[in-house]
Image 1: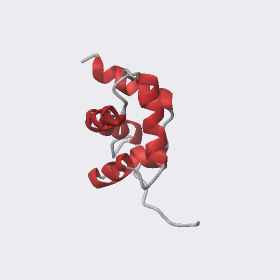
Image 2: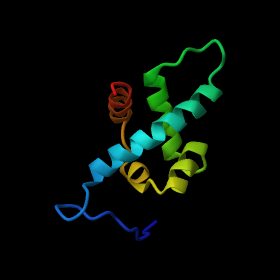
Image 3: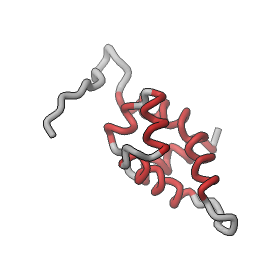
Length: 98
């Protein structure tokens, strides 16, 4: 489809998109982690790599709970950018180190 979409302004006047995305990820990660842990089987331990793969899959599916939650919060930078598993692992690591 050739739909028009509103993009964030880049440069000095506005916050950089990557900075906004990092801030949004810090807000969203605890909620996504709780959703993921509820879906895990009892015998499965939490693994950050599997969690980050789950995030990328969920955000690419616009009907998923995680994607709808991201849209409700207005976190368009996270959905539009389609960040990779490694980026999410870095954000999770930064969140855990504080």
